[in-house]
Image 1: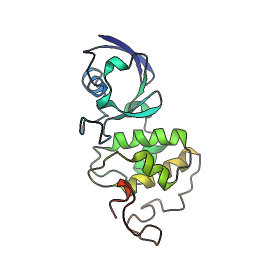
Image 2: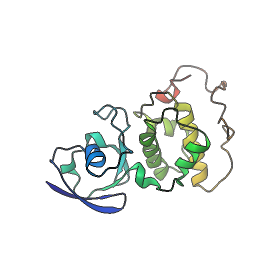
Image 3: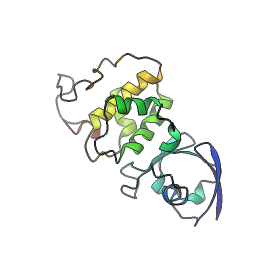
Length: 188
């Protein structure tokens, strides 16, 4: 079944079975390997892409439902690595193994498109459901904050930390001691 859509700004027609998940079309048909298979049931976020600007799980989207959709993958975020999130991720050494990071970055990019200055709560809510097997949630949160500063055109480091190790990922303050409030707090 031919389906016409836009992938990373380019018109594409794919002819696959109508129930084929977008993830497999991206990876197997279009050779875009950035989106990863994690769980296959939309729970981990490793396969996150943007559909018409919104972060979605590509493993759960049947290609037959995407006629005319505008899809952006990690490869289309910034091919030269100059997106604020890519810069922040590198600057702050956010990933550990890196497997989930394309999905993390795509979810964060959707957040920053609608909120230029997210709070910790905004970040936790937007990123909830993106699983990091290495538990780098605190670094991911700091990377998003740093990217927000970069995106706004500021070179200043967020108040919560320094460029090398934001907020001192190990630092405990009266504000952050206690039970986890979200998955992003689970590493404390």
